[in-house]
Length: 438
Image 1 (cartoon, rainbow, N blue to C red):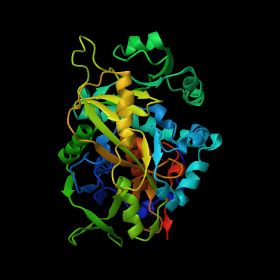
Image 2 (tube, rainbow, N blue to C red):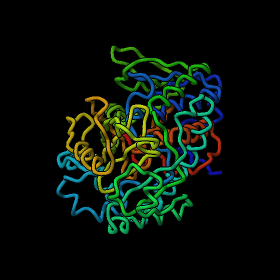
Image 3 (cartoon, rainbow, N blue to C red):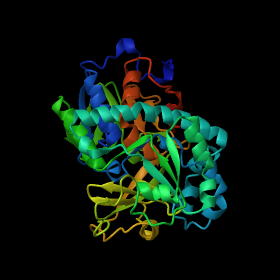
Image 4 (cartoon, rainbow, N blue to C red):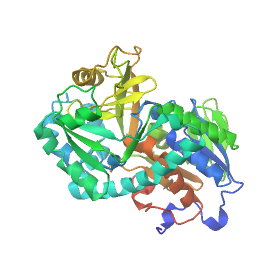
């Protein structure tokens, strides 16, 4: 067990008990719903508030992967190696707004600095602990909620279009081996044995066996929320306009209504930066925006499904996942403002690359979904007490792994609130490493 840093305790345990206390949780994505359910089971009276139904924002649109390979952050030595090619800003995996980056150098420069090999090893250690804490808890919750049909435990596959690209992925394989993540290298024939619908354009693949996938992320969040309500939790609709600190902290909704409690936990995902900035905090957080589209897949796949598991085409810069809605094509990262206009160039290029790899078939609808993944400079979320704000805690900034790490985040925060020794080291996730009073 890990010692608790004093700064991580919102209030001394002797003066605060979750049992029979009222708690307000802001944000009904995967993280917020898991936090609300965990605190409810610790004896608190919990209200979960969001402007939309649970699971309908950022948590809805991801690739549904629950994978220990996610310990490797976007800002890694490979990103630094690829910087010359990224200057064209036409890549499939990463695009950006120059204006946005120049206006957010307090995030961009530390983000690049954290891509050093030594720093990535520390980040991977912290993220792996959170992921390992989360995945068994996910599986238990999925069983409790009767949602086993949403879960597949077939791993996922990284695809490489050349010998060179496979060779340049050596750091990933090294990290997976170092952390004991089960994986297997595949040649072309071995890859087609697993996924016979793929075109023979990939001489190499990497099957990450130590992972699972969910074929309707939004529906799973909604199922967890129904469980929360069935056990006595309250879900309230409301758009949060501002924080309301004080002896009974809470929020002010659009229209002026105040919602208060003994303790308030902020799980607002990408909206956390604006919410805290208006409350007088500096929050060096950026947005890894992403897009998705759904496709019907092969018209006549025979006895073989279009895909047995998610695939990641490293050159094409997309992930393709089998979903209830069809094949979900998710794009790479676009670094841009939360409210910046949508730019479909990246997802359109990803679609063209995916059509080289598999028969996507026609689109299921005309919708292109866009969401934003909140990211701190070290690619680690902030989990714990909000600095200089008694009674307020935060849990957001999970970049691509919020869906996967919701249950672990909830347990870590619950242990900290109760003054218990947490199951993993909380230090890498301390909010005060970045969030500070302006």
